[in-house]
Amino acid sequence: MIEFSHLSKKFGKLPVLDDVSLHLTNGKSIALIGPNGSGKTTLIKCLLGMVVPDNGTITVDGSDIYGDWSYRAGLGYMPQIGRYPDNMTIAQVFGMMKDIRHIPDQQLDEDLIRAYKLPAIYDKRMRTLSGGTRQKVSACLAFLFDPAVIVLDEPTAGLDPVSAGILTDKIIAETQKGKLALITSHILSELDDLVDEVVYLQDGRVKFHKSLPQLRADTGEHKLVRAIAHVMENA
Amino acid sequence: MKKIVKYVLLDILRNKILISYTLLLFAITMTMLLLGDNETKVLLSLLNIVLIVLPLVSIIFSTIYYYNSVEFIELLVCQPIRRTSILLSIYAGLTLSLLIAFAIGVGLPLLLMDHSSTAALLVMIGCLLTVIFAALAILGSVRMRDKTRGIGMAILAWFYFSLLYDGLVLFLLFQFSDYPLEKPSIVLGALNPIDLARIMLLLRLDSSAMMGYTGAVFQEFFGSAGGTLLAFGLLLLWTMVPLWAALRRFNHKDL
Image (cartoon, rainbow over all chains, first blue to last red; front, side, top):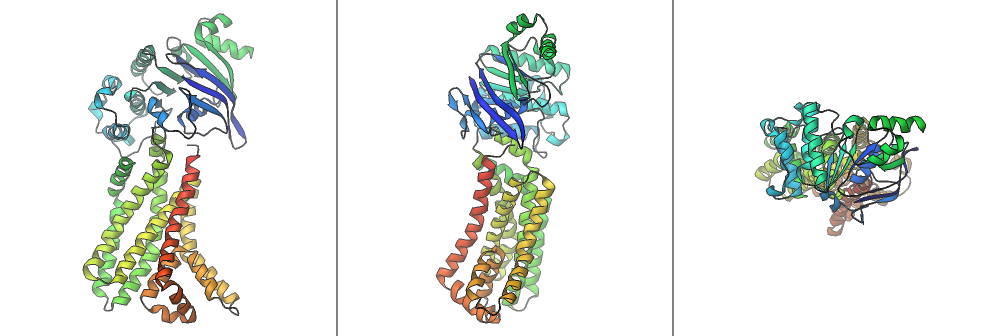
């Protein structure tokens, strides 16, 4: 369970997040939608502790994350652009992460690694990888430690349709196990089967936070793309 | 934390620049030891190398390494690790590898060919300068987001500490030459780690006689056991303060 309360952040003079309050519950997969520059990535980075908010608090399972680091053990993150040390091989990156987290091998979730057939290219160095393969590595790392909360920033942006399908299936499977998935995406069509709730951000403010059926009922549109378009036009 | 240090160390020790730095130091030290006829002269020449090359390599290498590991840092920051231990691990890995290079390049030949306590002091001073300038590099690169500015600042800092500062001190000494400046010059010497290191070693080599009355004051102050301890304490402060400031900034930095 994640609670954002009255979160604000400015980069210089530019307000990126403006009094954002959200309550996200376990077992749900939540889409974070909004135009470019609406603060989606910043909100995620605040949750991960990469960006320190100016005001407001974030609590994960009831405890404030400010100055805390241990909560990140229950967090998996797939960044929009995965950046890794150039000289490391894929195997070394996985090895290092396992080494840092020291979780026994049998508790690791290596489904995605197998599905993406990564062991075949374990010796490749990170700098030689294509954008899509990098994304696969990021996805595998996000799920590897079986975290309770999975944060995915534009997960399918660089992936081919087959790989994207594998990833969406994995996300659905994990949320059915009671995990919380927070997804940002611009490809709204693929979110239809994936998400339970929609959070719409605009100019750093939460415009609405509704469940998908509620949104459909309110807008009278079945498809998420249409529903969001409806909201944007009537705003 | 140990694990991150291990990965940083493994990464740097494979670096060709560091290997050539080690070889260069080794070649210079060996040449001087083999060609020099007088031990004091050899140590003086080595001192000049240590005072100029070491800070330069230490600050530039550390700055560039930090900017190159920005991705690595981002990867670690969203793992369950304290930010403090991430930065300290990177710093520890960096200084350890630079110290290893210095130990092999200068320490080993000195240990084999020259067993004097002055040589030991030289090695110690070299180690301290490496550690200090790596800390300054970390502070600079944590504060500057832009790589070009960061590296530029590192070069400027080195320029300031090794050349500009002495010029400024000389200027001050000339301007106020009518006043007794012995005590202020001790303070001025302590405000620059390179000067402090130079004074500490020169006093050991009895070259302080050439510095006239100021040299005698230096001898009286830094020559005593308390003075030496104070000098070492100051050099340690030169490490701790930049590192502390870097940690403070890093803990609140947006990545």
